Image 1 (cartoon, rainbow, N blue to C red):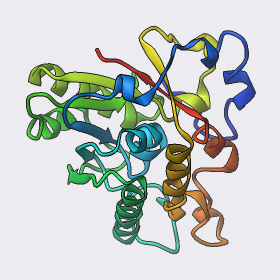
Image 2: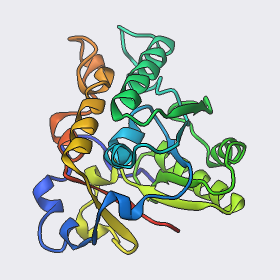
Image 3: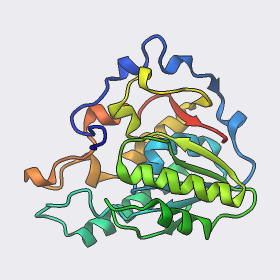
Image 4: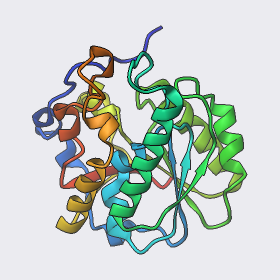
Length: 245
């Protein structure tokens, strides 16, 4: 059975903010939900950590952050006549480095090097489990985010957190695109209200991912991945996280 559609413009922002939507989630100051130890963000592809929780991470700075890079993002343009997968992976790694620097969090990156488009939950659990330590807080994609790599990452990441006995939080990326408020349970969710400085940092960090927010060339196979309507959902004044679980 096919998953939700990740094409087109997706669910408009006004739908998410309609009565019964995101405004029903308890608002929290970033400092009130900041974990006491290291934050380990598990990102299926380069940019997911920024899109999902970049503003929150910026608001928490200074904080020790480890980004676990599940894939290198080489599959975002599988038929590109412009960039080979290996070159695209290198570009995306550099974009991530620049974005994390813009966020001001000094994050380190641990690469699992799993195949983009072919992530297995067991591999994520094994790779993440090898780097977790007591007192960590793990952030993984929310259950049912909608992209197969995200769902496998969320499953495997949550399993690794349970085995290590550490807190696990969940963040959405593609959920905002295909779902609507009636399809989502906000039980356990927090609306982290971002200060202006964190919003600016996140916007600048997103701008670093030029391979995703702009076409690689005029060829249709090099089309933009993150269109303006998609990006609008990541320019909110708040980020939503579920947890701890």
